[in-house]
Length: 424
Image (tube, rainbow, N blue to C red; front, side, top):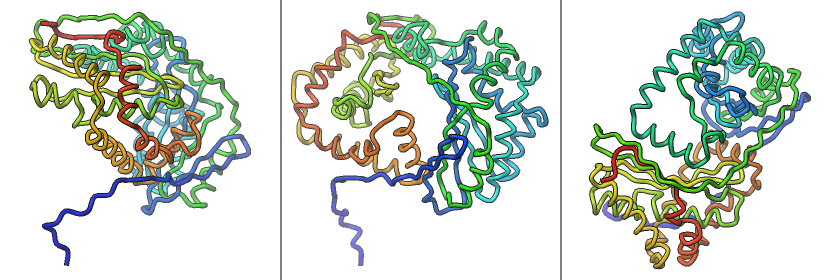
């Protein structure tokens, strides 16, 4: 009989092999990637286009285009498009990043062909109705106006602008006048050049058998598609500066700070990820223990690394009572210096490694989650065994590695800093 008074024996995760996915290529050149080991009769189909808002000639696209793509076709209204999915147990969503557009379908296997036929209608006959555009424009402007009153949104917006530059694709921000200037003709032109008749990759996950594969091929494999050019994305190192946006009516100050970092393919990447996790990447991190638990300045503080193409950037973020803003910055700098000048203990490093390995193991338990990882490999041109080596790469990091990474990459004076509130 199980003795529940005794805790189960602890075992360190030594390795995880990411389940392999299949790849098929249709006669029209479209690639289909398949994670078909789901057990329930549900699936997810994602279409990925080289059609991010960075390709648009006008600002404002990231607030409008993805909404307008689902705004109806020549034969259906936006409501009818949504109902065609919801009535058959599914839904569709579109998201647009700087370089790619993702059209994602979630639904039941038995209704797959109906979902896909509606998607083809969207990809070939989207109407960009003027009345729908005015509705979405009004919503976008109201959303922007509300967000600009939120210190966290304002800090994130200004931080990217200061880090990358106003004219850089990652630093550009939509303004009210940008939304006013987007026309029906602008949207249609982008659609005609980046979506309609353009090549896309397909990622199918869940319960995907030969039946579903043949259904996907019968709908998408017959389309006449042309290749599109990928968007170049360069990074220029700007002089770091400190920007304070005063909000005297706010009780808190929102802090965002960071700098350019290396990307996934750099040999230091996993060592840096371990260093950053110890610094501010999880609930037991040094920043949390100091600024939340010991000082009581905040409910939460974090440090994260966001990979972008061949590079990446670090963001440290928190909200503190404005009287504690200056001391919070001082404590962040102190924690960086401690990592740089003193070796992390073996016990703390083991805790960080166990957290990272456990989190990774918990993030690949379903076909959808496995496909998320495999999709990252495909879209970022990573080695096929990239995530298979994750655990070994993390476990190989030493205390000296953490100190070296802190000295090499976590320089407080090199960080761009944005404070929305007051520095008291």
